[in-house]
Image 1 (cartoon, rainbow, N blue to C red):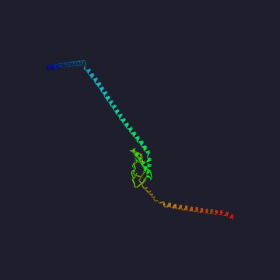
Image 2 (cartoon, rainbow, N blue to C red):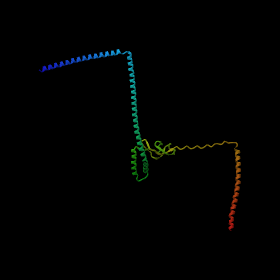
Image 3 (cartoon, rainbow, N blue to C red):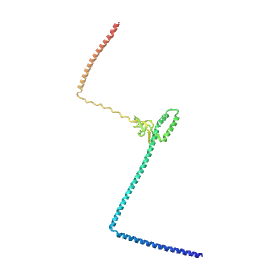
Length: 284
């Protein structure tokens, strides 16, 4: 019984497959027929369209399509240019914003550095007082040294440090301030002779310039003025003779005046003696 059933099932499966194959073939044939009919219809419509249009109409339509295509292309190019310009504007605005942000951050940092420098500069006189106290002889030097070290550590925490200056170093306008200058033969020009006050800096900013005294080259000796030789002339003896005569006359006049003055003085003294003698005689 089972074999018969199996044989029947096999026969039924084969028959089903055959029927499906035949139906698919029929469907394909129908599709091909429909496609052929559609193609024929399209060809017929195209032929009808070509029959109803002249060559001039086709040329006019072609020109219209060409012109519309040209306009569309120009519009496309214009839109592309506008898009590119807006893109460039956006990039420029973004770059300007980034630069403005960088400038703002830099200005903020500069302001912070400036205010910190001003605050530290106001404490530098305290540093000078500490240094003078430590240079002297004091019993409390150890205590002062502790305060001094703490003060220096605070300054260094804010990146402040003294400007290194040594005697005989060349003068530097960016870090030194010359209070005066002295002539020195043993040193080159603009060399530091003495340090009056220490300088301080914070990073690259100078809080206080180092006050120093510098050397200068001695001035060269002034040349002696040359004596001009007067040219000799033939009229010199005559001039000398005239001068001698004038001198002798002046001498004579002065002698006469002196004699007259002596006489007057003698007379005045005599009169004074008489005046003194007269009251004495009366008293006697």
